[in-house]
Length: 81
Image 1 (spheres, one colour):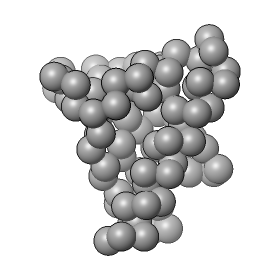
Image 2 (cartoon, rainbow, N blue to C red):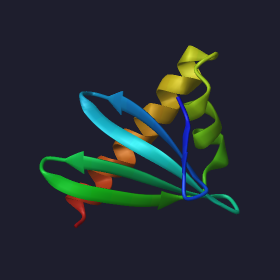
Image 3 (cartoon, rainbow, N blue to C red):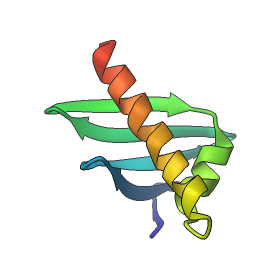
Image 4 (cartoon, rainbow, N blue to C red):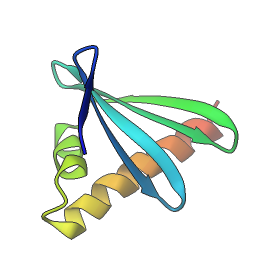
């Protein structure tokens, strides 16, 4: 489900009815992008393991953990804006 845009890889997923994208920016940097409660949220992370499991659903538990991590980052950023 990956797409390449301007040399950035984006992967879309959802967790708890929130849809979000994760972008690989290169050099171990990733953006998590979402619209949460009407607000555009952008979170930067360097957790490569989250990206790996987010992109690979062969291990369902780790895949869910990665989506949960992204969701929690989105909610935390929204609450601290």
